[in-house]
Image (cartoon, rainbow, N blue to C red; front, side):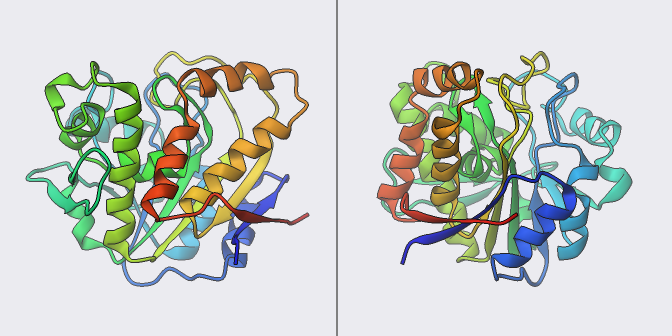
Length: 288
């Protein structure tokens, strides 16, 4: 059977919750909710108010990890300040997973490029995971979606450098690009193995800039909003988003595709499918 991806062109907080309920999996126990807290100065990230109904529904704790580059989120002190200024702590309990070391090391059996992944040690405190992703372009990965949230998003600051450097953190900006994309897929695989299927994915195609929410100075969105997608499969949901961009007749589509294609963004999806933790074949179920 093809993986189900639920889709609606209506983008509201309430619709996120509706589609979450339709996917048929209720996350139980202690739920970690992975968000992108947004670099200071970024205008495109999805605010806590947008995610509030679904986070309240699962009773989850918002989780994040420090970055590996200079900015407003590369130290615990600065990141907590940014999280507070962006309103996350106003509405939710927040856990900076790698706020204090040491990292939690996850094995990657059969990884293409790396055989271990370093994540914030507090991940061990959770039983299930809700991955809330803002689908948009990315200066290095081509695009950011569910797989990037699982990999770079949940990796600790050191783990981010480890993935970027394909096992050599000191070479994080000098690694082979294809190897980096495959290392992202490897890292995502380790997180799916850790939670043993207790994960739900939400991708929102809104404010789609060629730049990531990690950019303090980002381009404004280049094409119209498309919709909300929810799935139990991270590969299927990212593939569906790519397909929806290609199918769009929006005049800004080509600018976003140039970013995705110039970085061979689809290769991360290809590598993830080859690792076997998701499928590029899916059934898109459209909800009004």
